[in-house]
Image 1 (cartoon, one colour):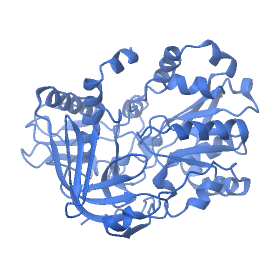
Image 2: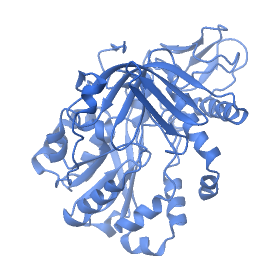
Image 3: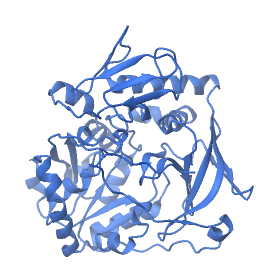
Length: 438
């Protein structure tokens, strides 16, 4: 069964409507129809603005603008790094009353489609090719004369560094032909990192808002130049920022859930035996322990400190995953509970199954042999994986435009490893992508 977790008092209440159905019943349901996005409703935007005030005040939020006067009054594409739930509140504080639609994952519409539509939200599927999304963004910008907010990383950062951006984003920017604005936050990740069991910490939050290119400058830039500008804008390390700026986090739960990203012990190389609790990270296999200090750095309680900087540890894990892929040793196998999304009414829990991931891609079977789905290694450059997804559990999502399968591992499968494996496998299978990134 899916593990429903209970955390401390200061958590985000994020639920999603689920219904138990048989696989056959879900297959007979009509697939949700596409609808053009609506112009963001001013009243609802105002409510969001007011609702954001408590968190904005708690974080002493401040922001600075650069070059924004040259695009005043123009609809624009807003590109923001994705750190935590407060991102939406930050944007409301910065751009209100300017109307803007929000590109968001389709499961955000489940059980609340009407309010999401009136807010101007545009549904899409993470890491699934969606030509319709581009048309919807053009419609919002050109027909509705409203800006569009997009998180190009598509998912929350796991280790506080930038996640891979899709190549040739410059093609999209040129097609839309509107000014491009970047919003890069400081402190949002440190306040509420995804691994930390949705527990908020006392951290001040700032944002830098910059006009990356005007519509006129956009015409003069090549796709490669635009991609390079985006890579430079989305280059950050939140743990380094915390350390270098002496931002102390004294909460006694700061290491809770750290095993979600640091799943492999660098001392004994065992996977799945790490436990983050309180202020310590411990390997249950060899007994080695690391203390997490108030600046987010790690120190072994005995012996060598292999990695004091968490992103360095995470980078080492990525290198280990790549070595497994190159040698042919990589394989992920796990039993899962399966949810399906075919419309915005609910996530339909259809039973149990088995998910595997190899160099050939994903294979999902289940529902007493009725469900069989395969997804090749080149289907996408990234993976929709999440921790504590809507408080249901850690999750891996596979699927296509017609149906998404939300898989909840029944063991301690590190979803971070699977996400890295998908990214590295894509690079290995499609080396031309690496050339494009240079």
